[in-house]
Length: 122
Image (cartoon, rainbow, N blue to C red; front, side, top):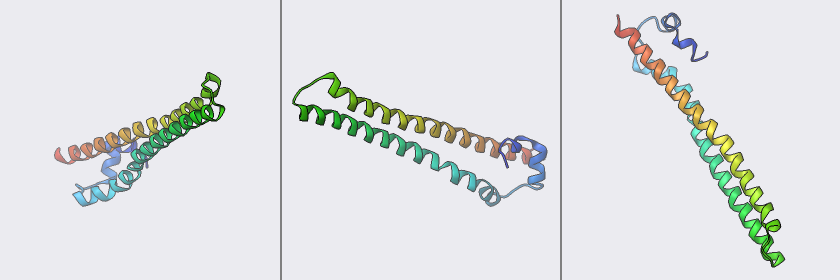
């Protein structure tokens, strides 16, 4: 069942013919909330993994410079490229995860408010 369907008042009346208790609402929304709470965890982990890759890339660049005994752009570039690639990958996962978490959280809150309004009119 999509959240968009719940924006339709006729569908909400079919789903909740009488005013739901707090416990019923909790049971209804808890699977959704449990699912979306993984998104910030995924975002945090991806950012940390991107940071770890950055540190490893920079470390390998300095290691290569140390082993060759010289400082040159060619030696440094490979490690920095790896560092930037892992940072990009981490952000490509983290940003959409945080966006969809906020989107779903706000949608659930909006549906909850609609349900309250439905029964406050009666």
